[in-house]
Figure 1 (tube, helix red, strand yellow):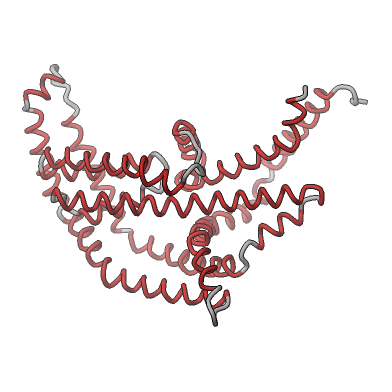
Figure 2 (tube, rainbow, N blue to C red):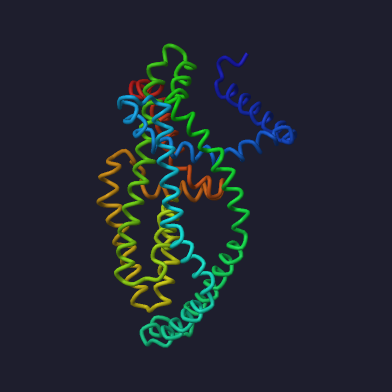
Length: 360
């Protein structure tokens, strides 16, 4: 009936899809348990995938050694990880905890010092020349910082509940990770087998390309952020920035968030520098900018090569859109998801459309 009119067939198919979406939305309560389950396992799965790509090369190396099979290699890594965790708790955590507690307890004094520095800056002739109509935004900085300190103080008091939730994640994700490392690439082979026989070669290549892209991105991001952390920490120690270790750790963690993380992590560092003096604040900003330039122009190209070929504008659009739709989880996963979708679309274009469109 509609053989000759592809537009009518497409319209009918689209209408049926929309009707199905509407009907499913009316019975959404049926899918609530599934949504809850997905929400619960999202973070453990993300951690498992992250550490899977970090540890997989090490497991492969250990497996090649004499007297070690894959299971023993994984267990050996777990033992070493536990030992490193204990070393962190004994060696590094007391220092971090002391700085965090001291920061919270010393917040009123820091705010007073910041207010004095801002008042001095407001009376500065250069600042008044830039803002001649008594409209200097510096007076609002103390208010925002005060709100920020209040926010941190309130949530530090609820740290116990966070630890309990985190304990559940720490209990589940090592189990998932163990089976992912043990059954290496099994999921990819299953996907290839599902594809029709004539597409299995292409499917195998796509799975391999996605696997290499994710591995390169995750391992590269860790190396790049660690290099950034070392550069920043050395710089902060040289200028005598208070809470240098704590601020560096926070900056390294936040830099896993594309684009936004670098900006957000810079704000508390510059503010802490301003508490000491305007010159320390300026030097803090200089250290951040220099470290990020070294990261972006020297370390990142060496680590990633041309594997991460994503335009900065594309990254900004993706991050903003993902943040609006999926919050912090969406921001963290959007770049890997974009890489996967891009690989799939390029291969689909090459397989089904490229030759037809070029010969049209």
